[in-house]
Length: 270
Ligand SMILES: [Zn+2]
Ligand SMILES: [Zn+2]
Image (cartoon, rainbow, N blue to C red):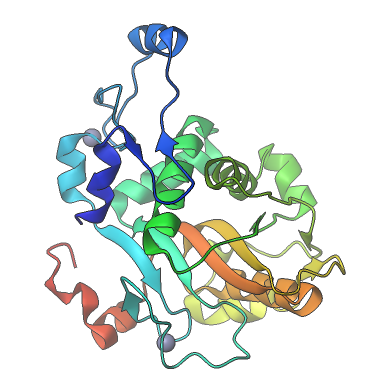
């Protein structure tokens, strides 16, 4: 819970990248008219804060980190999980926070109510998670695609907006057309955790472009069972030859994974 608080400083600069807000008189003027507001409760937050939550909401959120997509063990730092075998499609999953009622509401508004203004602060937050972990240095960012019919209905793919903004922050390229969804499946949230793997099997296709010795960061909004992201990572890895890591705004863990790893046992809300 302490690491994200570094974002309240005006700028954070690990290595070559500086996370900071836009400055200048225009930004200050706009802030007077439209001050930055907490993502959850919409209280006004200071102009210099990179943290998109007010101090009250900061106290109530559960910090992110990295999990092993295979056994769902939690890691704060290196090394990789000992259970990972070379054939795994997704080598690690970074997330900004644990999924709870506040996140459920926010992500619903982002996906279905066009609340796209939250993308930028969330992208900075998630980019910070990648930088702070120092375990993954992406060469390319790729969003988990929507089927074109679904994207037309919604008007945008929130994962692609997130990928584009993270690419700006991390100063790496992004590609929205490398990976695509060839089959329009039922929504993963409408079916049980156990049926999700078969619902997405073989639905992602990747253009045959080589990214050998590269690391691709695959981006989505929420990671639950990981079925979608693992399947997308498999298509990417097979066609490009790259290592693939995942990043999601919120992680919604299986209660059995929490019990098995015990990591969240001490946190109040679990
Ligand atoms: Zn708040
Ligand atoms: Zn593991």
